[in-house]
Image (cartoon, rainbow, N blue to C red; front, side, top):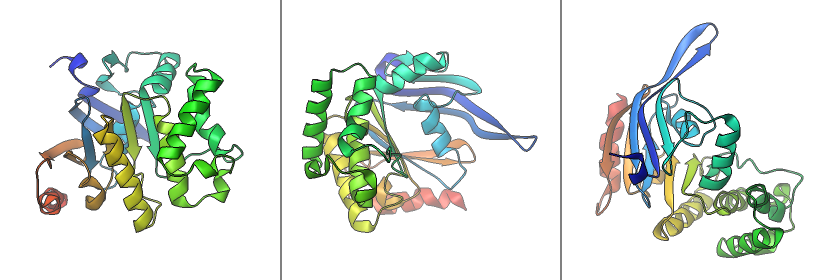
Length: 248
């Protein structure tokens, strides 16, 4: 198994934090491999290490031990400036809290990562327009985030995450702040981009959200306890219910 075969790869990754003078081991030797074009959901109870794993894969943090590879590049040995370049060019992020810049327009929120990655203003604007049209919110280009619904904010966040055509899209509870209708629409959009070849890693505690993926990984206590493929399954909810039994 070589890093070049995978978009996302961890080898025996551990992460230790200091918490009020005591050690907290958030990840305990995690091995994960995601091939190009896969849609993988990571499930598990709160505090199991899901978001920590996503942050390591996105170059937002460094492991205490082990290796992290993104698009064939080893991330854990990079300087922060190198990780910043990797994040801009190879990784897209979608967060539960949207993380939009409140005093910028929708257009500027989407274009900013493209400009920071070195695209021309004209190309950044072209990609932004195309994405907003695909996502059905082109008419909101000159609005600011406070003028948008939760579902519209998440569409803008999705456009921002995709504008640089990343090798991997990392989504951390992307439907957590949405009503059921908006959540369903965002999941349908993720499926659409996945079918176009986008590699997606999605963190969630919700079986309904996880059932969108091709493969589901279940974490507990900083470890991957189980995983299963949902491809071709006629009853993914039953499969996921079996995974969730690991909580007890």
